[in-house]
Amino acid sequence: MKVQSLGVGTPTPSMESWGSAFLVEHGADTLMFDCGPAATHKLVQAGYSPTDVDYLFLTHLHFDHTVDVPALLLTRWDQGGHYVQPLEVVGPTPTDRFIEDLIGPRGAFNDDIEARIGHPASQQVFLNRGGVLPRPRPQTNNTEIESGHQISGEGWRVTSGHAQHVQPYLDSLAFRLDTDYGSVVFTGDTEPCAEIEDLGRGADVLYSMCWDLQGEMKKAKEDTGQTGPHTAGQMASAAKVKKLVLVHHGPNLNSPENRRMAMEEASKTFDGEVIFADEGHVLEL
Image (cartoon, rainbow, N blue to C red; front, side, top):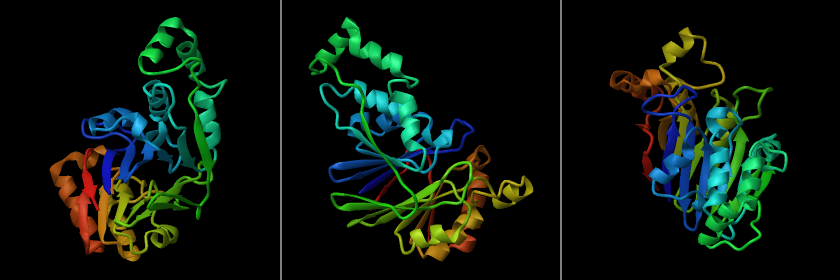
């Protein structure tokens, strides 16, 4: 099983990172967790096609986790030829409305979709890719879930858990992926909470946000609803995971010195292996 960090940044774009997205290849299935800025392009850079993605799990609907969803949906549909299996989209309420507002009959991209279905030039491109007219619209199977929901595939199971972030404005989830190769937890955006510790109990790897150095977060009053290296380490330690991967880090952590300090902070509260992940980082289990 291979986990690729496609996006490890925040809403603030930098030369090094922007937004959140992770890809897991497990047997015949490819699972994507969040789909932040440029995730579709980063997916292709990692050697995959949008048509490879079978499941998309959304932790919450902040734009740095979802803004590339239309690009993924439309590219997957446009490049897929005659038939592409509907993408399985799993997330908290209002995921169904979010997808409908993008590609539904009254959605933001409906005019584009209708043009590609109806115009002769677009029809010819579709035929050249192996399509058969009439061209179907892009389709998804949407599943809105809460904490404790489970979805299974061949050799894997994803369990959702509560993440404490910006409630009540947005529901937020974390996900645990269990396989024969090991278990991985994607915390999404959260402050330390017992639910994440329970979800991550004994996992092989915990991917946790690391917004900034803990002292900087406290000074800026940005330590609510999210974790820094110190609290990410505490959470990983309480869950007794084997490995902690720091992601979702802001531009202040792009400097080598601050990265080193972040890893040192995490290691003070967690005695397992700590990884500071760049975009493109690959972890194999």
